[in-house]
Length: 209
Image (cartoon, rainbow, N blue to C red; front, side, top):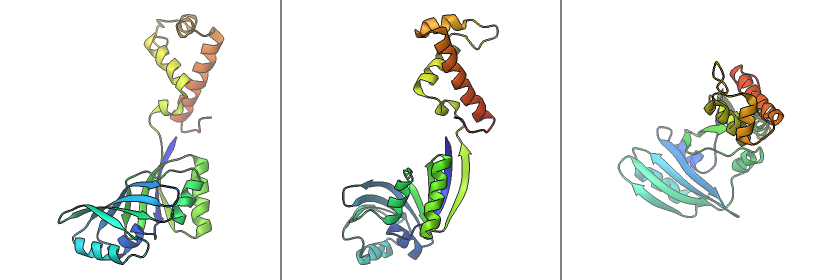
């Protein structure tokens, strides 16, 4: 399955904080949506922790927060929004889950997403419909062929390798492999054929179906 680095403008909450402090780096380490809010753990790497505190005290969208840790260079803050930010809702509507940590720099979010081509297209449509500037930084295909397989296909391929079915000369016939897996010879052949097709198509850069 493809993964993509998506860079997009993030103006809510911590995004505004990163815009006011463009030389600092912020990372959303975790976010937990609840029925009527979202709980966030934010890390700030900054040279001016006092300025960050002032911003949090004055931010109307952050009624309360807790400083979990603070030293000369780093702060760890937990806070809650009273509502799920609109951008977060739109991203969730495309089937994506934001991968954390989510890096924020100068009002922009950098997110690595596990996605599909269809979901990525839907995400682009959302950004464009909402007028949100974005950039697709990179799209890569998984380098692990087993990510493409169902649990049953993975089990059959693993058993075939362990029994020497792919050795040359073969140490196990298809009939023997099917018996070891307690399926018919035709069933084993079909499952292996579909799994092999997915692996080969992925190797050639074609979509596996």
